[in-house]
Amino acid sequence: MTKTAIIGAGPCGLSQLRAFQQSELKGEKIPKIVCFEQQDKLGGLWNYSWRTGSNQYGEPVPNSMYRYLWSNGPKECLEFADYPFDKHFGRAIPSFPPREVLYDYILGRAKDGDLKKYVRLSTTVNSVIFDENKFIIKSTNKKENKISTEEFDNVVVATGHFSVPYIPEYEGMDSFSGRIMHSHDFRDAEEFRGKNIVVLGSSYSAEDVALQCYKYGAKSVTIGYRNNPMGFKWPEGMKEVHHLDKLDGKKAIFKDGHLQETDVLILCSGYLHHFPFLEESLKLKTHNRLYPPNLYKGVVWQDNHKLMYLGMQDQFHTFNMFDCQAWYARDVIMGKIKMPDSKEIEKNIKEWISKEEKLEDPIQMIDFQTEYTKELYAASNYPEIDFEIIRKHFHSWEHHKEEDIMTYRNRSFTSPVTGTVAPIHHTPWGEAMDDSMATFLNQK
Ligand SMILES: Cc1cc2nc3c(=O)[nH]c(=O)nc-3n(C[C@H](O)[C@H](O)[C@H](O)COP(=O)(O)OP(=O)(O)OC[C@H]3O[C@@H](n4cnc5c(N)ncnc54)[C@H](O)[C@@H]3O)c2cc1C
Ligand SMILES: NC(=O)c1ccc[n+]([C@@H]2O[C@H](COP(=O)([O-])OP(=O)(O)OC[C@H]3O[C@@H](n4cnc5c(N)ncnc54)[C@H](OP(=O)(O)O)[C@@H]3O)[C@@H](O)[C@H]2O)c1
Image (spheres, rainbow, N blue to C red):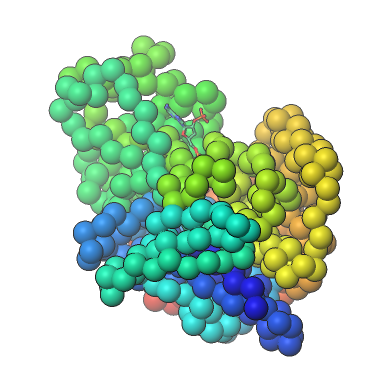
């Protein structure tokens, strides 16, 4: 029997486990599976707790989640084809749930498939090397203080890429008397009530961190974009200005000459793809993009087809795209999908990358990732789901955000799996200060 290691039990690692579990359920012979997870619970960055930051063993928990995070896309766009929201919650729920609700949904499918039995919790993978056609994995179980060395035939890297912050430096940071932090360390918007906040960046973290600070009572919120502004109609008290030039005392000075008194500077400057446990020849090197290089079908390591990466793309599509990747990876590992020759692989990767480089706006990017996901979907037996509905939902979502960034989360969408129309949430997002599952599900 061959052995497959899955590193990480976040949404991607759980997709991989589910893919194998579904095969086993059909009577197919699956490899022996070991999933390594350094946290003490399943769910990746959705597993937010007061421990997020550092754990009981004194080691950092590289998780970027924070309180009051609500889904930034319609839940219908990420719905699992084999585990609909209606099935999990026993009824229809609104389209933009807070973190705890999505976490519950992720754990629900894991429980449904008894996936935990494959996972070694509190176990960090320290190194992976490839030698004599096998992967040698060294791991440490912190709970038992046990170090193990094992051989595997295949490895699936599912460690995420939004946990290790990219931290740029600006003139004046050294002498700035306020607080400087990265969105990775942002935990609770309430602590910024009454303060002047400067947020740097123009992507999802910048948008959401800025809105959170505004919603929970910051005195002013100023967003500094580097290349292109987000350009939303920000509510009074929020503004978007051109890039930070330097800090001077407690002032932020922007490239357009704008001056802002600043208590807290929050760097929403993105994350690094960081795989310290992989030997160099196995390491994906990329920035956050829709088609990272050296991955055939965005999944299979070009130079070693026994190594898979899941979820390494920048993400419009998430959970069901991870599923399509995992179902594909499973079929490669189980020999159901054969790899073409290296020339064809090279050509295919180049074609996707060249298409990606021509993309000009979010709608084209959504279409690109939808086409990518549909191609993977067609290659495996992932259960029925309508990616055309998901594409349309993403387009509408973009328009709703342009119309009003404060109200887009109040909209309702249709399930691509069951056709259920989501009810409107009882409280508009801008007024919903309590993000607990109990309050969210308590429909009036
Ligand atoms: C702040 C934030 C908010 C987000 N909000 C949304 C949202 O609203 N909707 C959405 O669809 N997506 C959202 N995302 C995108 C997110 O990338 C995905 O939802 C999803 O969590 C990615 O899953 P993953 O399994 O790839 O990574 P992760 O969720 O990061 O899980 C990776 C797992 O690997 C483990 N791991 C890492 N290294 C090791 C190691 N060496 N050994 C053992 N285990 C290891 C980690 O502990 C972790 O559990 C958000 C991302 C961030 C950062
Ligand atoms: N549910 C939610 O509401 C929510 C909230 C937060 C995050 N997320 C998710 O988290 C993931 C990560 O998002 P992210 O925004 O952290 O990362 P990201 O999408 O990779 O964006 C990184 C941002 O950093 C900026 N940047 C990079 N270097 C910079 C520098 N030197 N100075 C200033 N800005 C710099 C980039 O600017 P340029 O564009 O100019 O290059 C870009 O805007 C996404 O999947 C997102 O969906 C979701």
